[in-house]
Amino acid sequence: MESGGRLTMIENLWRGICIISASEDAFSAGETIKEKLKSFEIPVVHYRYKDAEIETIWKCYDAIVFVMALEGATRIVCKYAKSKTEDPAIVCIDDKINYVIPLLGGHWGANDIARELSVILNSTPIITTAAEIKGKLSIERIANILIAKIINPENIVKINAALLRDESICIDGIDVNVNFPENIKVNSEECSYIISLRGDKEYKDKIVVWLKPLKISIGIGSKKDVKMEEIRDGIYKVLERLNLKRERIGIIASIREEVKKIADEFNVRFRLVNEEEINNFMNPCLTPPSKTLIEVGLKGVAEISALIAGGRNSKLILRKIAISRNSTIAVATYEGE
Image 1 (tube, one colour):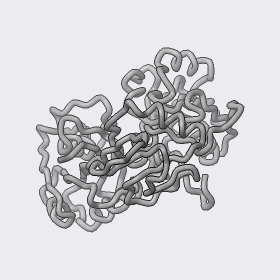
Image 2 (tube, rainbow, N blue to C red):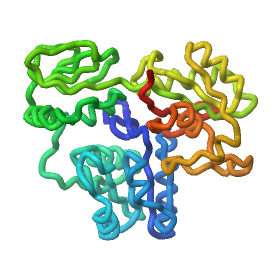
Image 3 (cartoon, rainbow, N blue to C red):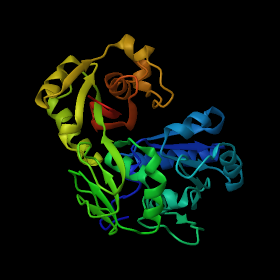
Image 4 (cartoon, helix red, strand yellow):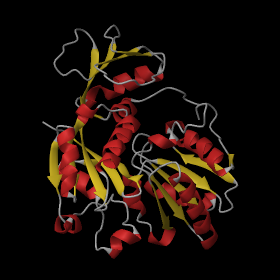
């Protein structure tokens, strides 16, 4: 954690954390963990183990917290683990919330998540890796940070190897402020290895990985009496959270037609969705609907609106979060024009 108590890792888990609990005591502990995380505006869901579709959860969340014995969590993880670059960070917590143990992906986020959770929960982190790979990012992680698509994956291995060797890597074409390790030079082309967001540029005798910045679609869920300034402020807060400029917004969508005023202010397209579209929409990564949504007969609003607006290949990157008492927001990516 940074000074001032900011959660440097957990707050960047935009696709959310899934808590899975094994027993009644564990479920109670999981609810406590969930409420504490929600107070930090972190997207989080909680399932009892018997109700959890782990294969789907494995693909849909940035981190999974098992509230159960370490032995049980290990047996579950062994069934689904594939690779360091594909698996979510896995953390195990006992049902008394005394210990927080990274189980999978320690060097890829789980260690930092465990440390930050231990501060939030007043627990003890158990870190067992012999050495930390501090600051050694991968191309995949950099693409996630910049919310971009890798265009030529055949060069990933070469640049990832250079990153692990602490060689100088240049990133060209960044228009936002990101704190990278010292060996990563921003908006420079002097390195032998380059990560470029400038598709119109040539680099002679360089090894280059090209990234295409993705557009975002924003879904808004709101009550009828929501004030437009609440939504406007919420969008700016989300852009700050994702470290994006407003120009990355491609479309705003909502079930409320009045939200079009906000889309007009941002000079982007507006997509009005209806209840039939929402309830016919299928995506395994959707957050389970709240009791309020179930009562009004909707399976969701913000997340579904963002995904519908983004089109067939859109991907949810920020699960719905509250931006006021009366509204929620979610963000999906798509390739754009």
